[in-house]
Each structure stands twice: as structure tokens, then as C-alpha cells.
Image (cartoon, rainbow over all chains, first blue to last red):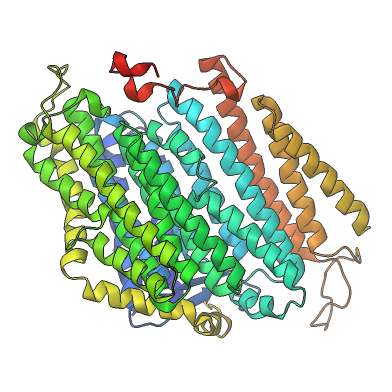
Length: 503
Length: 128
């Protein structure tokens, strides 16, 4: 049995080693790919071990540098964290596999180091128990994502990169200022210690201001209404593996930070939940309407990221344990489904030569397996039973009806129908209709060159089916995670009473 | 001392906001730099400006009586390093973008968001 310290360090160490190795193997593309895949598998193994250690509800915590709790930088793993780390690791492996036979990233030795840098930043942000440290992980994640976005160096990417970089840098600076104010008000940066001290601040207005500042900073990361504009302006220019990992992880880090801060640090007042509820509803609606107006697969899916973020926020707005468990399950379900759809989009592009729905068609004949694989995540995203999206949506909508927030439940249901419309649009245009004109024959690789991509897509579809057909353990896990979130004293005790690491 | 710092932060943040709202990417970078420095000063003031004695524990002391707060300085150092690397990256990115696109006005950057991109294949729908 590994010590807590080791358990909490390996998920960070694995991508870090991957980053170093892939940088060293710069000039050896084949070896670099294998090293990248190996590092991802080690990461997956460490994440599974971490989940096994926390699945019974224990909260693991450790401090680095032999400083005791509020002074040293804490790393904490409760159920939510270990679930997020595991899902990150699954994505890491799947996309590393997909990337094996993908021609898009060939000849970019920089892809793998940046990819592991992104995983490192995301995992760190999930695991840290220190708010300033979270800022640092955010920055690691950001700079890697900047690099990945403009990797191709096309005009399109540079244009998108400028907007993405500018807006994200401004928003992280706001996060930094918010951290400074919070430190000035409480004198601590440890999140467990903050949770102890923030309720004792006598100036209620100050607490609200701080809460709103943090909400602002994280909302732009999570692409909430009205701060989502950077996402549809930039995502569609990236290559498929990059796009899939962005779609899976980047916005979810923002959602995670919101869930963490508004269950642990800031008391959720009635006014605040109303605001979050309205933001959630508007995010769902604008996202899905944006998707309905586009005919580029990548743009449709990008707008659906925004729309789905709204569902995750409903749990925070309702703030009952069941609603929070809905948010947790939704995040897990969404990451898998969304990444899968983007990967399928990439294969569609390779098979038919375009992302424009108007220019392609007839894929049900030329790629029947892909068509079946598309149906699973697409119908799951729309929330049709018995797929994972149904259970996630159910866990979001039922608590909002229980809490009397009928407008949230109604929005969620209507947006679900509109999501189905978008998915049917892709289905009809790309798979079902006969191609308008004999499409320019795309570079058709042999079937074996698609093997790794089909393996990646089938794995994700299998996970979706598994959650959908056997939801009980996943729901139970989410409920336990939500219990830990609601009862923040468990988190605080785990951090502040844990012995510091001695070696 | 605090009021002076606070006024300085306000002026810097205001100037940063003005520059960031410009459409010229070069001004926006300068705005980012100023905003980052305003944030750093905010951390500094948040740590309270009091004594300037170095926070050293000497001899058989176990706690420090009155000294400067070392934590904000550590935080600012981290933030400076991060913002340096990010701004360096941004400048390179903008230089590259300028080389390829020959524009510095963000309003003219429409490479990634072509207005009629979605209907490009359908001439009849391209004009609205």
C-alpha cells in the first residue's frame, strides 16, 4: 500500500516525466509517440490507484516541503478530485492512441511536450488545496494550450490564437487579483483554512464581492454566458486531437473551480444561487442556439460545449446534495461524450475531406461503423435513454423540480430537444443524405491507418454505454462525492489534521 | 503608505483597461503588462505594509515579533515569472501573426471567423 504522499504525487509526476521524456526525444518521432503513450498509461494507472484509495469516501491530503497544513501547499483528493483525475487520465490515453495514426499532427515534435504540459496543469488544478497554487496550475495549463492552439501556424490559427491568448490572460489576471483580495481579507491561501475563516469575516459585502470576483474569473474559464466568446472564436481552428483534449478538459477545470469554491470557501447565499441559476439557463440557451445556426461540425460541437456547461452549473445553483451529484455525473459524462464527438468529427474530415456539412454526405454507406459510433455519443449528448446523458440530465432536472426552480428544469428539457436537433442535423447531412456532388476524393488511407482512431472512438463509446446501461455505481459515486462537497467539514478536517510528509 | 499604493494600483489598472480596450494588439500587450503589475502590487498591499525588518528567526526564538510579511513577496515573485513567460509568448505570437496577416487591428482579424464561412459552398445563400 502506497503512502498518501506518493499516491498524491504520482498523478502529477507522470505527465511531468512525460513532458521531459517527449522533449528529450524531440528528434525521434516514433519513439516520442511511444513515450507519450507510455507516460499516459502510467498516468492512467496512478489515477486508478488514487480512485481506489478514495472510493470508500476517505479524503486524502498531504503537504509538500515538510510544512504543516495551512502553511505548506496542500494536495487533496476527495471523490470529486479523484474522479476528475481519472477522467483526465482516460482522455490522455485515448487521445494519445487516436493520435498514433492521425496525419494532422505529423511533423510537430512540439505536440507531445505541450500535450503533457496541458495534462500536468489540469491535474494540478484538480488536486491542489491551495488557491494560489491553483492559479499557478491554471497558468501551466494556459501556456500549454496557447502553444497547442497555434501549433500549425496557419493564418486561421494565429488569428484565433491572438483572441484566445488575450482574453484568457486578462481573465487569469483577474483571478490573481481576486486571490490577492482574499488573502488580504483572511491572511491565508489554503483552501481548507479559507473555508474555516471566510464565514468569520464580519463585512458581508466584502465576502460577496470576493465571491463574485472568483465567479467572474472562473466563469470565463468555463465559458459561461456572457463570457464564452473566446471559445467559438478559437476552438475550431485547432487540429482534432488538440480540439478533443481542449473540449474535454479546459472548460471543465473552470467548472471544477466553481464547484470547489462555491461548496467549500464561499457560503452560497440565496442571491448568489439565483444569479448562478440565471447564468446557467442563459448559457444553455445561447450555446444551443449558436450550434443550431452553424453548418461546420467543429463549430456546432464547440457551441454545444457552452450549452452543456450550463447543465453542470445547475447543480451549483440548486446546491442540494442530489443536484451537486448531478453536476459531478454530468461533468464525467460530458467529458467522454464531447471528446468522442470531436474525434469522430476528425475521422469524418479524413474520410470526406471537409468539416462543412453542406459539402459532405453518404457516410453511412462508406463508413457504417463510424455511423454507429456517432449515434452513441450524439444521442447521449441529447440525453436519450438508456445512454449516460439521460441519467446525468435526470440527476440535474429532478433536483431543480424538487427545489421549485421550474425555469431551470424547463430550460434544461427544451435545450435537450434542441441538442437533439443539432445532432440530427449532423446525422442527416454527413451520414444520411447522398453527397450533393461527387466529392473531391479525399486522401483515402488504407483501413489500417484508421485503426488507432477507431480504437479510441470505440473505447469512449463503450464507456458511454457502460455508464448508460449500468448507472447505479456511477450515481452512487456521484452522490458520495456530493456528500463530501456539501459537508465541507470533512474536507477541512482531512487537510488541517493530516500529518505533514516526512521522508 | 497604503493609500499611495492604492492610488497607484488604481491608476495602473485604469491605464491597463484603457489600453486593453484599444484595437491595436501592441497596446493590448502593454495593457496586459500594466494589469499584471497592478495585480502584483495588489498582492503586496494585501499582505499589509508595516515593518520592513527582515523576517529572520534568530537564536532561540521560535516566532517572529514584528517584521515584513515574506509571503506576498514569494507570491509576487511567482506571478512575475509567470507573467514574464506569458507576455514573452504573447509578443512572439503577435509578431508571427503580424508577419502572416499584416494587420495589428483586431477588428480586421477575421481569418478564423469568416462571416459567410458556413454557407461558402452555397452561392445562393451566401448573400443575406
